[in-house]
Amino acid sequence: MLSFGFGNYRIQTNEGVDFQPTNPRLTNPEDVGGDLKVASFNVLNFFTTLDVEGNPGSGPNNLEPRGADNQAEFDRQLDKLVTTLAAIDADIVGLIELENEFTDTNGDEQFAIDSLVNALNARVGADTYAYVDPGQSFVDTGDAISVGAIYKTDSVQIAPGTTVAILTDRDLPSLGINNSVPVFDGSSTNRAPLAVTFAEITTGERLTVSVNHFKSKGGTGTGNNADIGDGQGNFNGTRVRGAEAVNAWLNTDPTGSGDSDFLIIGDLNAYAQEDPITILKNAGYTDLAEEFIGENSYSFVFDGQIGTLDYGLANESLTSQITGATEWHINADEPDALDYNLDFGRNPNLFDGTTPFRTSDHDPLLIGINLSSSVN
Image (cartoon, rainbow, N blue to C red; front, side):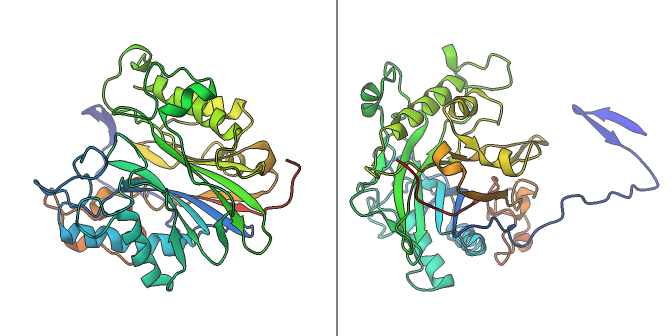
């Protein structure tokens, strides 16, 4: 019998239904080939500052922490993150939803990306990974979270003679972008993108990776940020301006790489047919999930509906050097009862830090690359 209630259809039967699983768990990601592997991973608000009343926040405005509520939750979150990153085994990882702190700014003698790298190296081997130092205490000027990147020191290095670049609203006029409304600075904006040029140690070949986190659909926007009912939700205008600015910014080679290969990764909070993705594709970027996985690609589930929020977008120069891309479905399909949280009366025994399942709410994206010389 088919019934309808609480906005959903349900199958009611006294005999049981023989459901066949069509998306079995993969304990390791599929092979993407290539000499280098790049990953994009939203780490679900990884904070070393515990979300306890009275704790000093991070970021330039001491914003409240958003991650683990206590030490037990933090230990669980870190354990599962390390398990997942060790299994991903990427040479370069763009991290999204990190605590926006890149030096010890609040006196607790630790900060998120440093703590994560130390724990990861304790698992996989000393000095295996290093984090990209942005050269300042905060990447984003108006948010408690930001983006970051880590890399394997025996396969890549930050390219000599280049700088780690951060895109802020101060850069918009020089890019020909209207700066009458905030795009990256302040609240209810995109987080500031980070660009890093890596050099492959064995060949010297270079690749510039831009890590991004666009404004979510949550909240209530006004003007061209209002939800107009076309499926793109709130703050589409902000995401559109972010996409336009990132494209213009990378066209200037902000790190001084002298190389033509650019890869945009991160959580763009826009589905594959929405305006921000269309803008980047029209600018010459290839959606690698769409290219290698097809129309059934997804990295996020919301109210039972799947879609892609996490991207790898390669420019024309780089696309021919991509060997594969895959989404490792360890999070979106999994119940949140398996994650690190201990609130809402959850059974703590459901947690297993030795498996990657439900490390976050977003699935990581992995990209394989064989870098080769190209005409700049």
